[in-house]
Amino acid sequence: EAYGFELQQHARPWIERHPRHEWATISPDDVLADRSLLVEIKSTSSFARHKYGRPESDEIPPLYATQVQWAMEILDLPRCLVFVGFGRDFKDPDTGEHEFLFEETVPYYVDRDRETAAMLLGYAERFVKDFIECRKLPPLAPVNNKRAYSQLLKGSHPCQQKTEAPSQSSPNP
Image (tube, rainbow, N blue to C red):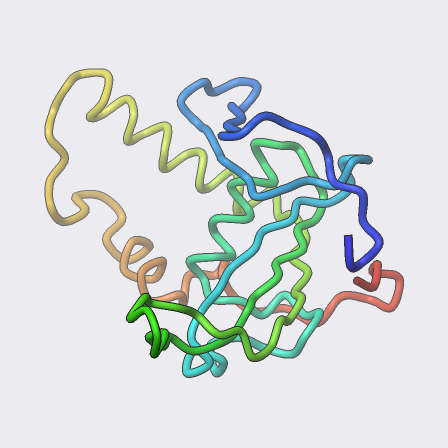
């Protein structure tokens, strides 16, 4: 609301399924009422700030980039606004309760990448067929395509490479 967005109304918990793959689900944080933008909200330590790029760029850690690509594919949305609240943990001196103090909130825009989404769906579909449907325990280490698996874990897979910041036509929060 502070950014002038109207959010879509939905039940909580909100879980959506892929239109063709019922096993592919997502529980998004929010979507704009006009369904033009997925909204994901993250909080992390200020010490992790170096893992993120310039505000309003698409430079977010690979784990979150993968998550929002998956979500945009399932929801069939073109773009995601990722709000990241950077801050620090502390204990309330009066109650001893764990608290998180936000120091900075930064928006990032990630455009949908159909190639990455297809790759993610392919990996997931193969996993479902090879292990879930036949009720077989998966190995602890990848059997096929170890290089791609290793690259995904390290954030160096080609689908996770950083790109330029969005054009000036991107909506400003």
